[in-house]
Amino acid sequence: MKLMVVDPGRTSGIFIYDTLAQISVCYEVKDYAIFAAFDRERPEILVTEKFVYQKRPHVDLFPVEIIGVLKYLSFVVANTTVQLYHEQMPDQAKIISDKLLKQLGFYRVNKPHANDAARHAVVFCQAKNAPGEIREWFMKALTAAKGA
Image 1 (cartoon, rainbow, N blue to C red):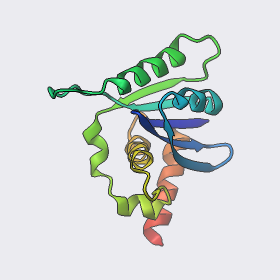
Image 2 (image 1 turned 135 degrees about the vertical axis):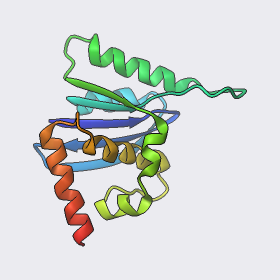
Image 3 (image 1 turned 30 degrees about the horizontal axis):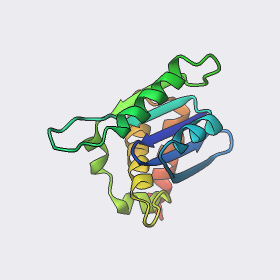
Image 4 (image 1 turned 45 degrees about the vertical axis):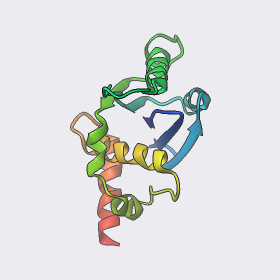
């Protein structure tokens, strides 16, 4: 099973965890490269940060495009692998500190969007609707990180 967490934007953060390979990666991509990453990763679980409109001038709506196309690819395209789609509010990830990301080995220097995707991954992995094998992996990683 593969989890993909996306912090959408002109620079999108991506967090991947693959239960078969037992590896996690965290990186950033520019603009439309997010769709190539989605196609390459072929996740069963997709988590995105929800776009929340704030009444400010010159709001960049590019994240809305990203989310919309990812939803389309997840639910409409015939060869999709996505079994679970979940959105999180932007502020849900704010409670996850850089210190915890570093302890877990998820922190990336000078990659704020990758780190935001990792924060959303941490929130999702602790959620009740996260699949058991994802929660188990994360709880082991968390226990190991706190013991280190």
